[in-house]
Image (cartoon, rainbow, N blue to C red; front, top):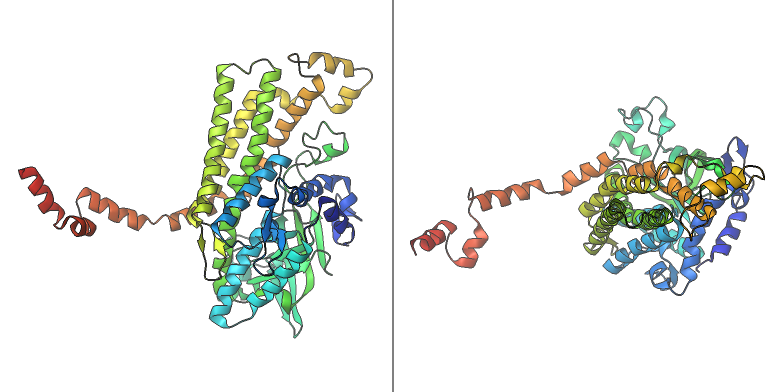
Length: 501
């Protein structure tokens, strides 16, 4: 089935997760005001899938059942699937101006699908078949998954098994005939409170000593022993002060991250997809990361389309839209954003089929996408700040604008060019503040892994040894064997002949 946005929201009301925010237990995620923007953004992943104009991008055909499903529950079966995925990311970024949260779960599905196949091939386990049954369940119910990779980590200089507190990484504490008991936590997990399920993966390469931490599993969001503690965000309580001050009141900012605590949670074997196979943790981490990093040239560029439009409108409202430096800044913003988009498309078009039958992206280019985002996103947001001016951090509040005594002064003195009302200008300035000053910046930096992680992968995948061979041949240090095969003589003999002629 494919849920509508309304059906998604209603489905949240049927769940009973243990959620805390601001020191209180939240009774209904769907009805809590501070969660509303995150719920609305996720709902768009459902709503647009039911819109005829966007069906081709947001729908796919399940390779397991042949049914039409939401693309956020799909395992990629072609290069076209990979390309449509990033097109979907850009579209949703344009429509919401924020993180719509479902991509982490999507990438977890794909990463575990590939890795469980490889584990079974080596160890004759049953993880892949279990996972395919779980995937059918997710597709049939059109579920939103909170992809949970990051652990609290504690002392980063120590491995998981070396930590003083062994629970700083999620681990198995007991194995039973029916399943396993897990304890620990996952931190900074996007979209958790408004998801249906949590799907966990290891956060790093594990050794044999760390095998209790080599886990991939799924649990319902309201499983016994699971507690969610919602994270604070920049200016989050502005949502309670009216529509204008939030900047993007309907969809918020970033993904509503939370700490997930697992207090001796039982997981039946049919929901366990890795348990102790530490030698496959690197594969799962890198496969998931590649998928996830490829997204950022889609979603963040979609958001850039919104901020570029806002910056252009602000300039127009100020009467400076034709100024050379304004046009130059806007052009530069477009150049930077489309560069990242090009990387995202490239890593998708360079994707390939894996032994599991599913397709994955080009891992080198996927890391290039994300590393570019960590730099260029900051630059196009800086240019938006430049165009908008200091007013984005000095505007009076909405309460002052609506005040019966001083509201008329705000209306009068913040008026701009004819054709723009004062309220329209305030909305644009607050939107730029939300996008270019708020929590979206560090999210673009650290989401899908911090810059050092991408540099490590680029260094590994960049094939410097092959480039050294090329330099030796072109410089004449070493002969080109292909040249001899094509021309029929060695390079030195050929060029000597040419020079004599």
